[in-house]
Length: 71
Image (cartoon, rainbow, N blue to C red; front, side, top):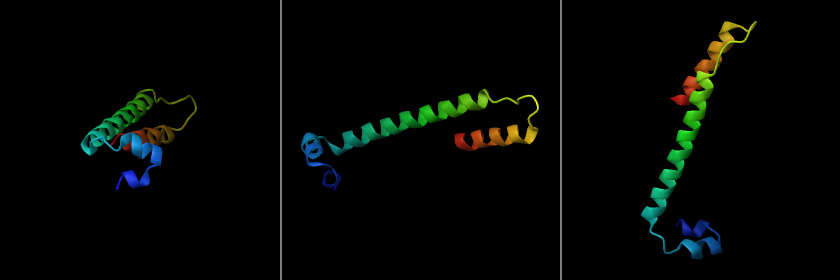
């Protein structure tokens, strides 16, 4: 099923690979991507600070959006 949606070259290159190995690699890839996004969002949150003359609720709303991204 998975091979049917791939190009012919890609099919022939990967037709002998075990499906479980492909799934493990995909899980590892997406876990890494998720970790990177979470780290970037945490970094943005920790560096978030009010600027002179800005409104408090603007800063709080920005922080809330970072917390929502993290959850």
